[in-house]
Length: 137
Image (cartoon, rainbow, N blue to C red; front, side):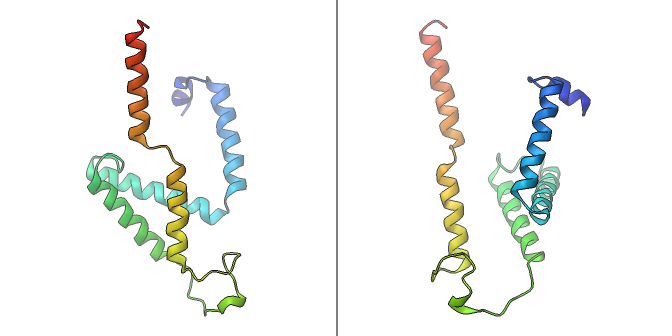
């Protein structure tokens, strides 16, 4: 670990500071079960990468395997069924006729819309390099 810290552009002290700060942020941002879920997803991704020899974000079949693994994992750790309580129990904090699947898709799509597209960033990087080359930089 010390070798990885030494290779950091920021230096060992700055990298340690960043990691400690990130730990505090993560501790505040999520409960223990959510942090455990994140760790479980990372473990699933590592297992599939070891089997496939490729990263999930580089090959569509590996991506599909990760999606299925995460889905299966979440189904396996689902909370016990609850009796429906109707409109008086408004789980999402607002009255809605939408089911949890629709709400989940909507939240995910909203986050995806805010996320920069990798190919856009690559194209932007290529454009900047081309412009620098044209300008003799």
